[in-house]
Image (tube, rainbow, N blue to C red):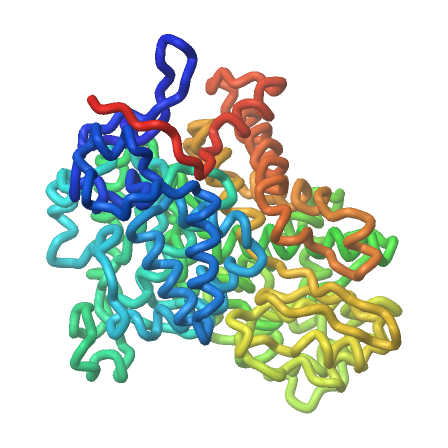
Length: 571
């Protein structure tokens, strides 16, 4: 059954319905079409469901109460995750209706931080097949696999090679939990129909010894493909995506830092694609910094930035801050002089051997550190950087917990009355510092955002809401805009636009509580705003789309699927 038959049709009297040709157990087994106990008496008779369900036809409200009760009775996050995944595997409409109703409570369950544990335990908790598992042995047969796929209209693909899963590293085939989670967020936020979403794991082996020695491991038991064989595999994969899904947007997800940049830069002009770890993280971080400027009442161009940890996420943040400074009027040289990046060897310097290509544009010259007081000029620490440069914005993407110490915060306080400190590493266990400590060390003066969810912090009688720099505010909107606009290329300007659009969604009430991001409960409204602005940018770059700017808000909202039960009619 193709996607067209999942979408609603309208009869001659103007009533919406869904045409269905399945019946009986086949219909109940189809998680896209199954309504469970909510099939009406007429539908039960028409589709051969009499006796296959309890007699009482439930309303969606009754179903939501039932499944939420089951959710609340689970003892821990991973059990809650499995409960929700089980629901999604039997009734996607109800799953999305439930998560939409409890979005702040459930996003941390279906995605970060709980999804990290789900990926680690994937082979031991495997439930049901979803998506495609592409390997070096079957990449040439992708066209055959697609014939077995129910949907004929894939619009969004999320693919990972499993090497850089969150802050956890190489998890082998267990990385499939990431595309599954990301695509759930696509549907939740931007209303892309779940049957139009395709999760893919590129299983090229693993170097994780624990996984390789696990007798229950479900992936390929071999060392990870590297070098030219890996590059050839990716080239074949992209060629097949272009051929088999010519109208789809491809999102690269959780690759190792160098592969992330190489794949993005190599193929971003070949098909409509982007890397959320790089571009999404960069955009959401820039949005938070813009919000912080509203609190500080200062300009972006007045700041100096330190990015601590320059993997895919940190590299993306660096690129986006640079683009943001350029958009605000600085020339390239002036923008670069305001950005300092640090990796495991300290501040990245031009004369250091073996610097990754994607870091080189932001490496600083030796002349820039003349006069600095440091113990080792070839290995300058974060604290030494803060003591020698007036850094006012500190971004953590290192996955090194506890590295933003009290001494680091005190250095930032000397540089700015309202320092911006974002410990963004995921999951929570990898966070550079917890908000409560930063607020106490800064006497409530720091402007804080995190990558994982944290509760409110009370300090000296004031309540501070910790804004979460969650990429879910960016990537579903960009993907939706790219789909509607039929974008052939997603420029950096699209992501700078998304950052500014998201920042505009932060209210004065948010800022009063020191939060530089909207609430997750406002997700769909934020997505509409961000997608609309991104679509305007896409249309500006590709005017042949024929989309008129005044039609964009309607196009965005009318393209968003809502989880509701419509009447079924047999075809």
